[in-house]
Length: 314
Ligand code: SAM
Ligand code: SF4
Image (tube, rainbow, N blue to C red):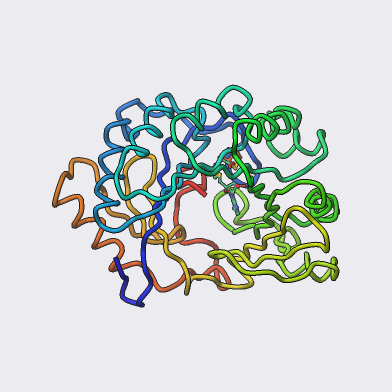
């Protein structure tokens, strides 16, 4: 599928739940969100049917996300269903890592190719404060078990937050000396709970190479600029949706956990997919790709979407 600006659209992010076992301050309200009736969220069968239609339309890579995808009942059935789709080249999943000690091996066996694990701090007290209910040690064990299960190279996603983890950039970068990981620093996007945060919280990605001039540029991958410390086993990635608008190379469409298709994370426009099947479902997906907005407007104003990140899937 090509959109109106000539971009190839071949990457679907599929949110399988809006629930989460953490309450990261920038993502979720402190009290969490009201649990919706079961039927409001896409069923396992609907997730697989949408993915099949997307692959028929030209999608080659799917990332499962949420909320926290690993709290979703039936997550392994969803993975197995997606893995069985002929033509799907890559099945990836983004997780906060806390449930990987139990689920990394089953996820690998269910056919997941790649894992991204979110980790914003290496300090236990900060981790507990930011997630409001998480324990750093769970995520660190999750990383270990994921590697043992064969997920390598791992990507660790770190949202840069001024006044919170700006002083840990060096600690994260130094992890790449001994581990074949990609540590990816992501600019905080003004949406949901953090839309009104102080400007100082929104650290530009450029802070990373500016503070660590030893980082040598290496080949970019998708929307990530990449660097490596001399002799390091791993790499450092920079994802800068605000300061280095990467909309021009965006290949993504998204499906929310309640079955709405979005051409852009930050747009208000959505196409309801529930109840559509076969050719109608494919047509909706093609229409969404064709009308994908040219760019977001985060440099001028907060995100246009009224949804929080946990409802769309980061
Ligand atoms: N629960 C899983 C996790 O945390 O990896 C998957 C869903 S979470 C919404 C996906 C990613 O979005 C996480 O890496 C999270 O840190 C990131 N995220 C959430 N809100 C964000 C924001 N306002 N700006 C940038 N990244 C954000
Ligand atoms: Fe949950 Fe991920 Fe949002 Fe944190 S960022 S509250 S782990 S969905």
